[in-house]
Length: 77
Image (cartoon, rainbow, N blue to C red; front, side, top):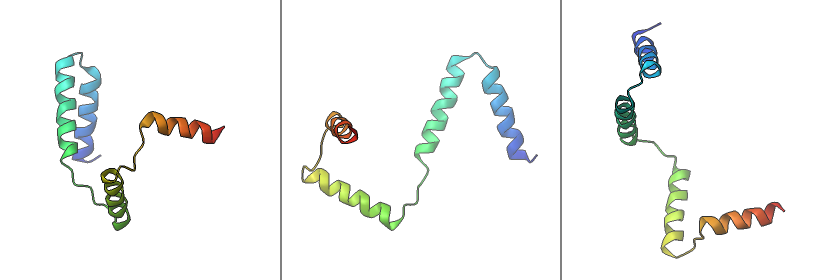
């Protein structure tokens, strides 16, 4: 087992063993903040889909989530 695995296992053990809710919230907050800073590489197809989505939003080609659920239910019936 390498050093990184040892750190992960130690953290897992500590998280499972603690009853300190504030500590767990702080740890969770750290993970949330670091994950949002990660850069995700998108393929050209994904970028194109995002641009198309933005265009749909700007031109009003949108429906609510409840309308989408209704349409899904109708389609599945």
